[in-house]
Image 1: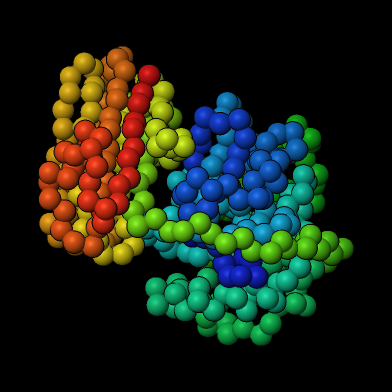
Image 2: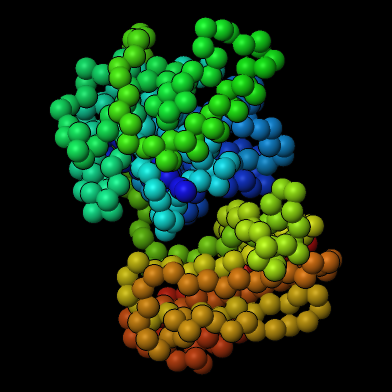
Length: 394
């Protein structure tokens, strides 16, 4: 069972689309799986990284690398995203965070800060954030899912009248209150745990709470004890997003889950652990070959109907080959949606791998010869747009 997590903003709810581990020095929050890093990324990195942050402490340690968290829209200044991001990481760690294309069983909407002791702090603009959520409520009604809005208890007076048949609203003053909302109760009632056991106790109860909450996501929680209000910093003016690309090309690494092997993944005995791989400025995606890297998936997505012609050519273990394309990417018929190549690597892969991918799109059919020209570096028709990816592993 999976859940969607929305971060409340005054411009409308923002979906947490994906969380992935990457080989990077700092964690980043990015817009719509693009290379655009949002201004709140420095705050997100501090929220994640020990000793200042709580994610590594409560759900780690994670070792080398950092997180990339993709969201569907702009996040302004302030820290009201923290509560939603905390829960999103908990779901991600259990494989229960639903992305835009994943089926989902529950919808959570959050606003609130989280401090080092996992207390939830008040935020500004709660009423405006709820007023901006009409489209989400309508979408949930069509889907048949009643969303749950979770708000800091200090902001209870700012909650407008809402139809209980459409949405449940809960308030909380600490992460333990969120656990109670999810049907578990306090992690340590009547007792302050020893400092060295605090994280393990909260982590164990939080995992159990998340699982139970996906089953009982419709429970309404009573208002709890108030804490002093701490307003968000003034929101920065919204930044205009970059021009939309007609085609989105992404690469996802397929890894053996902990305690399993690539043999089990390749024979579909277990599901691979997926992690997005970022492309550099020149479109190159670099991978580190290792025993847990089982392969990768190249994904092509378009939101509008276009003619799309794509090709993938590669060198693996000293041999060249061209991979059959998904039929919808043949350039002869219109295509809208998503298609993917899955490339499995030999279990004992030791040599370097290099792949080249070209994706052509246009409003008219594209002849196969255009793909050969694009691979060779020759020019193609002006009306044809080109995206390239080079995928290399060492």
